[in-house]
Image 1 (spheres, rainbow, N blue to C red):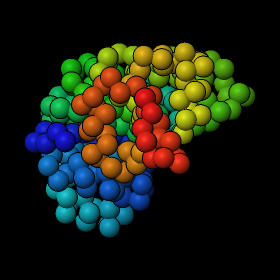
Image 2 (tube, rainbow, N blue to C red; image 1 turned 90 degrees about the horizontal axis):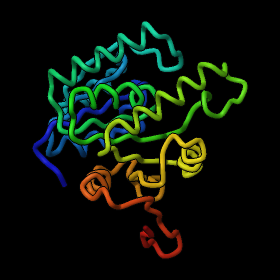
Image 3 (cartoon, rainbow, N blue to C red; image 1 turned 120 degrees about the vertical axis):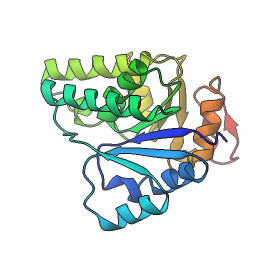
Image 4 (cartoon, rainbow, N blue to C red; image 1 turned 180 degrees about the horizontal axis):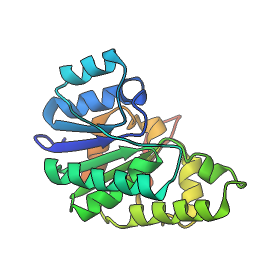
Length: 215
């Protein structure tokens, strides 16, 4: 497991920090300096946990469910400023906007390792009636953000999402893709570090009956 480095964790929803990613952040923080980029945190318990784990927090303005050129450019600019200021060794994002804009910012700031966790693709991918032009822009932006850094590792909690991105040619068969729902990567930093350290581990699966990894 990597240790002694700075890790940025970037998210769209403050409520998910402890409820869904608490174990992951706590695990990262044991041997690393963790920097969290999040919308404003209102929950006192969340603040207490982050302070206990000595996580440095940057609260920023983010509208996760709306794509607006001006606000999104401000978001991208803010991400670049934070990354340049903190100089992390890894950028880890989950949910669409932190992945799209964060991966771009990480590439612009020459972050060595980039990891993206897909917890779902959202309405912009699932709803065919979404505004077609906006939908196309989001798809192209996501493709650019995942392709711009060759060291990107992609984690999927749902294999249907991986298949959908392959079908849409947003990712290719050569990407480092890991199915996390059975491996426990969503909450276990050791798994995440393992696959980042071993980028040739492509499209990992778990055989439910035997528990063996199939590559």
